[in-house]
Length: 68
Image (tube, rainbow, N blue to C red; front, side):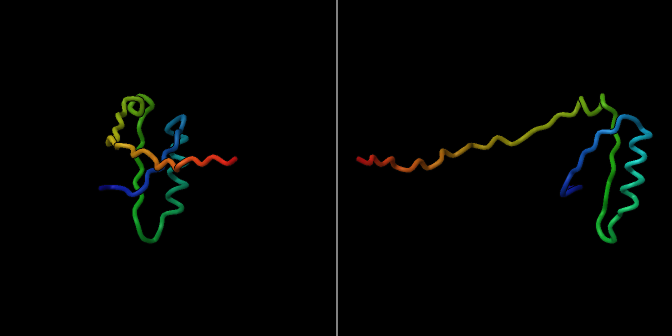
């Protein structure tokens, strides 16, 4: 596995992305790693995301009481 967390930022141009990359480089931690992946809008649009199917359990519905 490559990452524990993923942060995403849209940049309108490569020049704008370079500004943010420079900022991140200025805050590199002493320990740990940071990876930056730059992709185009078209590549982002072709991304496929999958989630495992999870069976949702029905919540325990408490018994209704009537008060007179």
